[in-house]
Every structure is written in C-alpha cells, then in structure tokens.
Length: 116
Length: 113
Image (cartoon, rainbow over all chains, first blue to last red; front, side):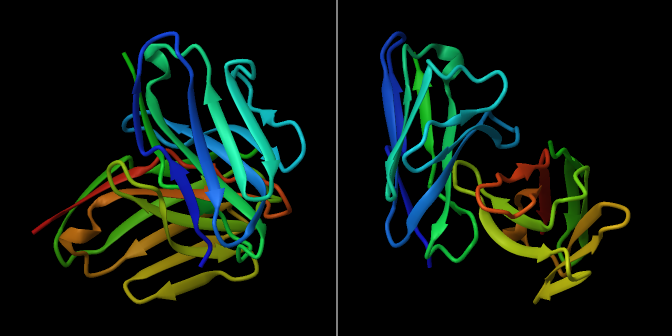
C-alpha cells in the first residue's frame, strides 16, 4: 500500500531556531500534500495544502512566512518552522494524495516538535 | 467550507459492549467519510470509510452508517475489546482532486476490561 515516510519523529529545538520536517512518498507520486498540526487532546487542524510545483495555500490564521512549505517534487514535501517559539510545540503530520496512491489519504508518522 | 461535529468527546464502555460515535457535517458536496483510529503519538489509521452512494458499510466488528439527507454518519463498534481504546476521528470531504479532509473533534474511547 501507499506509504509516506516522515522525519524526524521527534525534535527538540531552542527558541529562535528553525526546524525542517520532511515527508516522502515512497511508492506513489504525491501530487497533493496536506500539513496538519495537532495540539494535545485536540483534533488535526489543517495548516496548508500544497500541490507539486505550486505555492502552498495556507489556512486562515496560519502564517505563511513562519511555516514554509516546499513541494518541489512528486515524492518530497517539507515544512520548515522558522524562528520557533514554545507555542509552536505540537505534533505535525503530513497527509498525501496522488497518482498510484489508491485514491486515499496517506498519513506520515508525525513529528513531535518541542521548542524550549 | 466544511464543518464536522463529533459526539461524544469521551466514551467509556465495558468490554463486550457496543460503542457508537456520531458525526454531522455541513457541506452537502461532501461525498467521502473516513473514520480514523489514533493512538497516542501515532499517525491516524484508517479503519473504515464510506462514500455517499451507499448507506452502510460493515467490516467485521466495525460498521459505518451514512444519512446524506440529514448530513450525519456514525461509527458502530460491536463486542468492544480493550485494544479498541484510542481516539477516533471522523472526517468528511468532497473527494475531488486536492480536497482536504476536515476532521471532527475526536472521541476518546475507553474500553474497561
């Protein structure tokens, strides 16, 4: 079945630094990538949608200059949290759809970001 | 945009009993309704889904029903087991190319042995 590999699984960083999260589709072409954020005991909230080769579309309230999304290829999308602050600490998870992916939504394994 | 409401937020049942989780959605264009099980710190796992051209779907102990007129769908788990304990999310989307899933708020299911 379709697999999305997400790295890192956990990261701790200092306030003010940047962190990059990668999602790779291993056996299908991810034409669309969705990035979600999940705070403890809450639901998954969509941050942005990116289509390969295009600029990402951000949800209301999500700062595009803080959460940089790159989707330059059909197998790789990245989310960079710039100038991270403690309130950015959360579980970030990607979800991909695309050619050869069975038509469904394939989730990455998530990244637990802690900003200290 | 789509809005999905989910109830209850927590549900505690005795092992062997049934559990029912209900969701409503707002966008009549939505036509794909998946249910996910998420364990702490893990990715959501698809457990069952239903499309708008059917009213019910069953997979062993899990079933989902859909009422498009009323815009609600439900997850039914029978003969619950302790390993069913997790957070369950419903979602909805008009499943055209690129449309994102909108999730309900989640239900924390606890199955007591």
